[in-house]
Image (cartoon, rainbow, N blue to C red; front, side, top):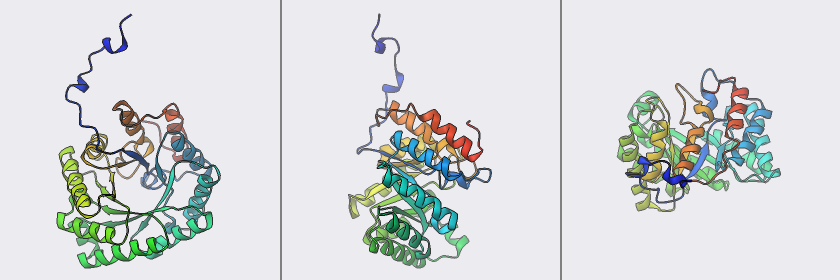
Length: 302
């Protein structure tokens, strides 16, 4: 009987991509960005709890529990999920989204204090010229919002990931000012976002490489996230390219849920990172995870 490696010739290894220079974690956005699709039903808390446990079993490193600033139900669901992480001693780390406004960050602070565990704040603001034009923002206003938001979260002992929406269409000097301000105020991570699915693999490589180099100059220990969408069909390959280029945490949503055509598929991220040898995770619960989210959101499994 031939050895397994003798039964096929793997062309994938001939010109394989470089391995990421640092360990790569996977972050889940299903319960926040994933449910923003217009046809997606916000799951009830039982489905969210089941999904939380499955994400933990599948080795997902962190999970966005929601946006508490959006209203009472979001607050209740986030607090219940955070309590489950605490009581069941889950490994997955909690995160909550917030605009770069104290009114959005304060509910995260209050939930964290009630539950007694740190919750990472994903404080986001648009960064591209078209977003600045649409919102009527000046760069000075954006810098002030960034400074005040990150400072408030850090004063309340919460870790911060500073998120620039539409990073992949933003000017380099704008990114340098915004990220530099966030880092000065204590942000431990920053996120490059392909919010409208604009990037090609070359574009993803360029922007992630630029930001990683900038972080290495400013504060090398700051982590770098990649958040992608699949409008051009590049969600998965851009995630792989971003990891090689220096992103050490990659975002995805179960079943590829999300606005328009959706976010990068969490399912495919897990499978491909395992096949590439970047993670060593038992994926036997992957189908169950898809079924729970399909049932909870009313969306079919592709």
